Image (cartoon, rainbow, N blue to C red; front, side, top):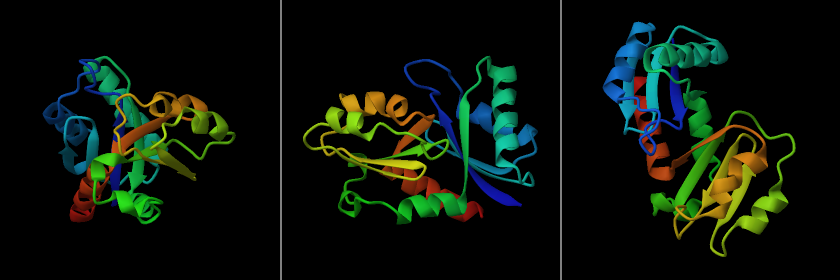
Length: 180
């Protein structure tokens, strides 16, 4: 049995794509997933499954949510070792003490032709970023609410992405290790 981390993109944001976590847990249980646990309302789920094909499982989860809730979210599945790699590869260790300032954008794949020059031109004076394979790290000590870089990161990288602050990344990692 594999332990998976599901990162849902764009749910429960601004009153759109509402997906109550209790209902999501029931739906995932009905798909045969085990030890389902959620963290906060923004779509972070840890579970176990006998399914070894993460792409097929992601599609099954998205389709089930579309059937039950009327929208089809993007669901990125990671394995425990993937998340451990993300944490170990953090290029901004100084930001860990202030986890709200550090963000990891999980990408569907490593970008083939990311426009890093354009991202560089959009970043604020205090923002720093680094692309490492299929993860885009952002250190934003002034926050991301008004960040022009954040508003364009997915478009300029050219692949679907879903971001989490470091506090959430660390909490999900603890949950996944507990379930494993």
